Amino acid sequence: MRRCPRHLIGRNNDGHGDGDRDAILCVVGDWFAYARDRRYPLPDFPDAAGGGCANLADAAWAKGDIACLRELVDLEGSVGRVRYDCSSSSSGGGGDGGGQPQAPWTIEMSTLPWREGVPLLRAGECELQFENSGERDQGSGGGKENIRLASMRWGEDVWEVLECSMDSSSLRSLFGTTGPWARL
Image 1 (cartoon, one colour):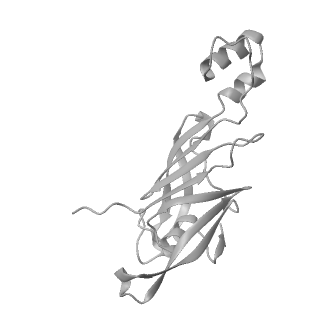
Image 2: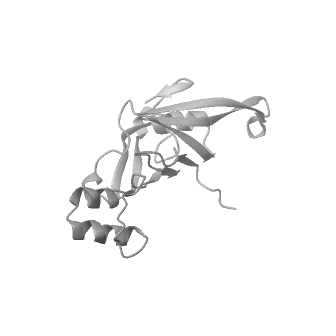
Image 3: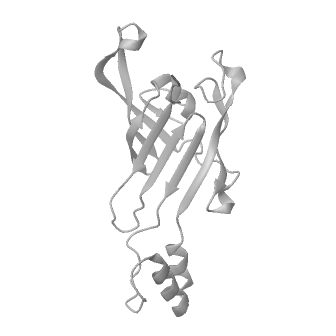
C-alpha cells in the first residue's frame, strides 16, 4: 500500500470586510500551491450587464476605471517547491523534512508572471503555533505526546490549519523555525 506524502493545508479566511482576502496554502511533499482571492467588497457598477466579475470588468473598462479593473483581476494562483539543503541533516532532503530549506518556497508558476522565481515566504514572515493534542502517538511506541500545528501567522494574518500530517520536527524543518511560536 502506498503511503500518502506528508501534507499541510491552511486557510486564511478573515471574512469579507473592507480589504479582506481569502487565501489557501496546500503543501504536499516538497510542493506547495497558494491561492489568494481578490479584495472584497467588489466594486459596484449598477450599469453592468449582469452579475459576475467578467461583467464588472467590462463595465469598469467601459468607464475607463483602470484602478477598479486592476482590483477585479488581482487574484493569485501559484505553485512552487520548497528546496532543501541535504547537507545540513543526516535524514536527507528532497521534501522528507530533512535539512533546511536553501531557497525556501520558490514560486515556479503563477497567474501573476512577476511572482515566478521569487519566494512565496520570506524570512520573518511566518510563525507556527504548536499545541499538545492531549493524545499519545501510538506509532512511536505509545509514550510520546502528540504535538500538533494549531495555527500559522504569516505577516498580519493568522491562518487556520485545516489538516496537517507532519510532525513538529518536519514542520520546523519545512519553515526553518524553532520554539513553540517558531519564527522563520
